[in-house]
Amino acid sequence: MTDTVDRATDYQDEWLASRLAAARPAAPVGPSLTICIDCDDDIPEARRAAVPGCTRCMPCESDHRKRGGRNG
Ligand SMILES: [Zn+2]
Image (cartoon, rainbow, N blue to C red):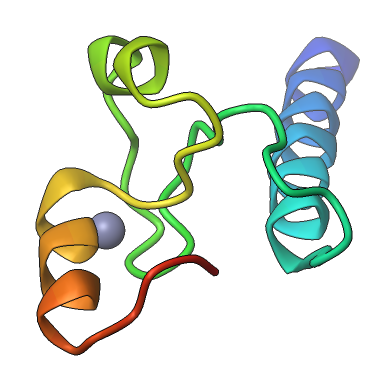
C-alpha cells in the first residue's frame, strides 16, 4: 500500500523538478528534460543525449522553430 504512494510521490517530485528547471530562465543550458514542456510527452533518451538541454520532444521543437522561437 505505502509502496505505491511512495512511488507516486517520487514520480511527482521528478516531474515537478523538471517543470521548475524548464521554467527557470537563468541557466543557459540546463540538463535535458525527460518530459516535453509543451505537450508533457516523454522525450526519448536518444534525443536528450543528442541535444543537451533540450526541453521539447521533436515534434514540438520543430513546431516551435517554425513559429520563430529559438530558446525557451
Ligand atoms: Zn512535445
